[in-house]
Length: 408
Image 1 (cartoon, rainbow, N blue to C red):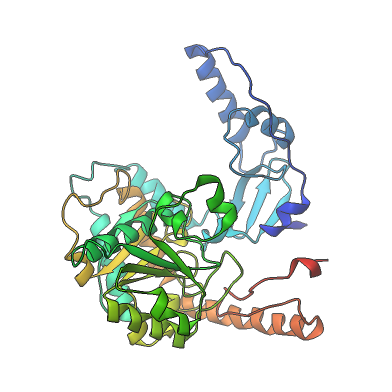
Image 2 (spheres, rainbow, N blue to C red; image 1 turned 180 degrees about the vertical axis):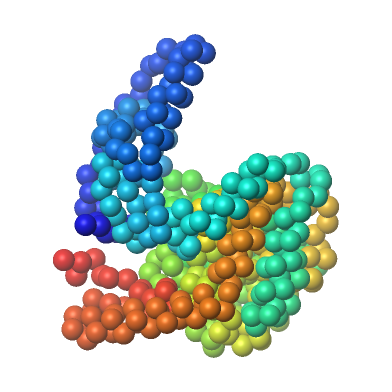
């Protein structure tokens, strides 16, 4: 029997308490080797071999980890397709997909084959030199995007390591474009219920109190509006605005879809004041709606200047990308931005493989077909239990939220 695993389900599972600080003796070299060998023996003998009780391992390791997550008392050891196995060989149906990451599933044979082959050739080399895959990945993303009918002026790509990094690059690029016309053109606009990351720039664009409050003050110059409020745009996006960042379909504070009318009006207002329009498709893009990019359903007059992506791009291998128009690219010169690990041959080659499969017409058609199955099912649930199911989106990004008070 497979247990269901979802982000929401974590609330019902037991958690270990945060442990007090401990004093440790320094380890000598034999101890380090012994610890490493013990871990290898415990976790690597057979794909599903239950060697260590999760509670014991978690308790032992808790003293050494910064507590940035409240995790359930489960330790996953292996996965295949849509399933995960814990250290007791219990099987779970993984509804989290690594938080929208594993679009091709766990231990996908194509992905693991590429990883194994490239790891034996070259994992990383200094970004002061070329490698075969960063440019190939960039070319594939741009040309496939243009052919898909999305981002009509897509031109160049910056490869990094995560969604937050992709958005940080977008924020820097927009600021550079703005300051090229006026030193006062430095402000940004984002929208309530959005999520753009946890680094300081992307966090400043994420107007959620629980994320921002412990780390305030935020970077100056960020203003927040309401998604789909067209009437507020003239006062929100002004001559001082250098960039506007928006998710075509929000995913953190409930799934809220930006209307075509709003996106066209937002694009028009950005053009009026010379602001860069950034679409964050880190969660809603890469085939999740049945189109390569969620904004492909919008008319060309709503297309962005910058698009950011990550999550599913590497199917678990850390990678992100920031795609820009030539107009934006012309403002970015050598030395303006960089990354140590971004675009390394291993991640870039894996992403090249993953992107090609996610962009395949047959794959996208299958997403649309399955999306219709979920949509019909959710419409039936909504008819039977009014108020339980909110907005139903497209493709496999279908459900807005199940209201907490109806969860039982």
